[in-house]
Image 1 (cartoon, rainbow, N blue to C red):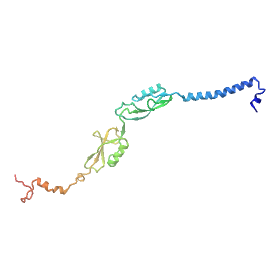
Image 2: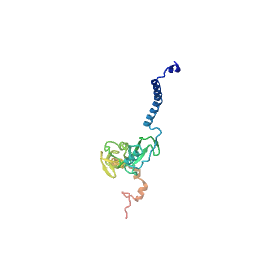
Image 3: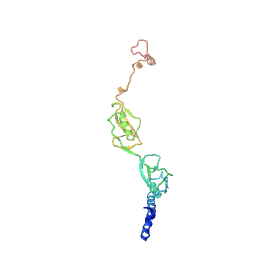
Image 4: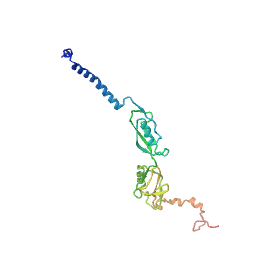
Length: 221
C-alpha cells in the first residue's frame, strides 16, 4: 500500500494527533537518551589533576574532593628524607585531565621506620642461609662477626647497633644486622708453614751460632 492511499480519507483529528505524537517520540527518544548518557558520563567535562605530593594523606583527600575528585591511599613506602605521612607519588600525575569523580591513587610515606620481627636464624643454619632469609624479608645484612669456639659458619647470634637481638624482636628494616658466626676452633684457622719456621734468614736474624753451642744462639753478652 502506497502512502498516498494510506492517508486518503484519513482526516480525523485523532488520526493526525497520533501521527504528531509518533513523530515527536521519534525525535525525542534519541535526544532524551543522549542527554541521560551525557549526565552519566559527563561527556566533554574534564578536570585537571592538582598536585598533592608533599601533602599529608588527609590534606590530599580534601584538596582532591574540592576539585570533584577522590583520593585513595593504595601503598606506603619508607623514605627517610620525606616527611612522615606525606604523599610521595600520585597517579594520575599532576596536570593530567580526567573526568569528575575519578580516583587519584596515592603512595604515602610511613609515619615511622618500617619495623618487622626478626626470624629465628640462630643455630638453625649457615650464614648463607641466614643472610638469604633476612634479605628476603627486607632486612639489611652487614659484614659478619666471627668468634672462635663455635662450629664454622654456624650463626650463633644477631646484633643490631652492637646490641644482641633475639628472634621475634621487632627492629627497623633500615638498620644493619650483624650476624655473629662461628669461626671453628683456633687450630682450624691456623695454617702453619714448617718451611717458614725453618727459614735460614729468620734464624740469622736471631744470631745463629756456628761455635757448636747446643741452643744454636750466641748468648755471650
